[in-house]
Amino acid sequence: MRNARWKAASRAAVALAGAGALVAGMALFTTAPAAAGTTLGASAAEKNRYFGTAVAAGRLSDSAYTTILNREFNSVTPENEMKIDATEPQQGRFSYGAAEQIVNHARSRGMSVRGHTLAWHSQQPSWMESMSGTALRSAMLNHVTQVATHFRGQVVAWDVVNEAFADGSSGGRRDSNLQRTGNDWIEAAFRAARAADPGAKLCYNDYNTDNWTHAKTQGVYNMVRDFKARGVPIDCVGFQSHFNNESPYVSNYRTTLSSFAALGVDVQITELDIQGASAATYRSVVEDCLAVPRCNGITVWGIRDSDSWRASQTPLLFNSNGSKKPAYDAVLAALNNGTTPTDPPTDPPTDPPTDPPTTPPPGQGGCTATVSVNQWTGGFVATVRVTAGSSAISGWTVGIALPSGATVTNAWNANRSGSSGATSWTNVAYNGRVGAGQSTEYGFQANGTAGTITPTCTAS
Ligand code: XIL
Image 1: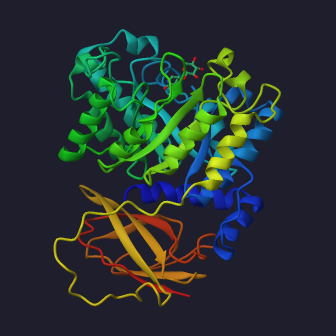
Image 2 (image 1 turned 180 degrees about the vertical axis):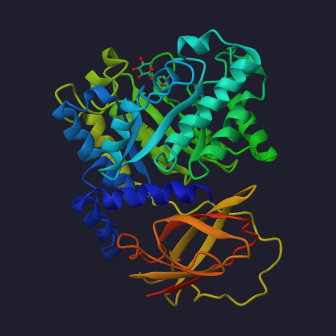
Image 3 (image 1 turned 90 degrees about the vertical axis):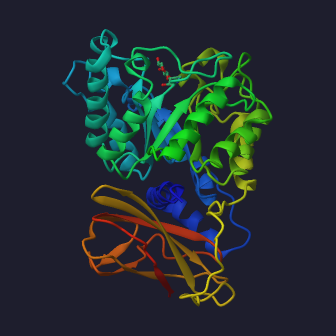
């Protein structure tokens, strides 16, 4: 259920993005079938997903670039500006200007931000490249803490660790100065990131992990499974998906996405580009994501071919002159044809429910609410999912009794009454209307211990 927070943020961002998106979103709830989105972001949002792009701060002064960015996308990943060499060019001296330019551009337009990346063997500043051992471990953890703290609340998801696995048949870790500080460097980075920004999704991100049969894919899979088993705080796995002749799209990609999702993490396609931009391949990638409920977003690695790090491969959705390529049309059509995910099934109940339902069952309208909690020592984030029954609702109120000692410190996507004991939560302007069987989410952070929270839901 941790993906709920992501989707809530994404949906909220889209709802704020502008009248066009808002109208499209409302149409979803008032007409059937859902209206087709006319932009990538709006169409993805109708499927409870985001569609993002890498952004370079230096291009924000190019109006042809920002016109497409602002029109089409509802998520942004700084292409280089949040990397270690950009944010900590000298040890202990942090530099956030270019990253903030992108974050401000995105957030002021209702786009969400993916943070990329906190710990990586590449694009290290020279002071870090020459470090090793415990000094490097401390410097890395300090970097994670400082940067994640600086952007706390502004970044929906962090690529905490990037590209830590080796290519080839070993299935093991890549050698690097970070790896040589000890095999636990990855989980240490995730723990530091969680402590610094408990509200952000924490992702592991890599390339050449698309083919389910490859050793590298299996190596990452085994790490994520181990992390989930041991309670290492990981929420999502990013698949860069730079497809080219050496590393082509394969039809088992969907199996890869769904297999990772089955571990209890969200999956995202984080840096998509396809050599030659075959419309059919782009369509397949989008269809694969939409087929996996926990695949909650796609990011292409640049806007126009001329913006691409691999420009000569013409791998993106827009020509260098800004016009839409056939791949664009294929992606938009696939998004509009896609299914809207319901949350992945939670663990099957071990006992039949004995208590009568506290909210009207489906078929009599009303709404139900479920909550998922991310608890750490001294605090927690709760994500609450409100689901309409068999009829659309135009507003909702959720009641939550917090145990003593639990105090709400901040909240998103809902109006709150009360911060401890009996609390009441009502929809905000953009998430009151919920279609029959559809869901929306809000969340809050609190001090103390959540225990078992049993929400009630009343529709209006
Ligand atoms: C690339 C950028 O696009 C280039 O501008 C830069 O010169 C090198 O890095 N995997 C990643 C991304 O995680 O950060 C890389 O981005 C592409 C490969």
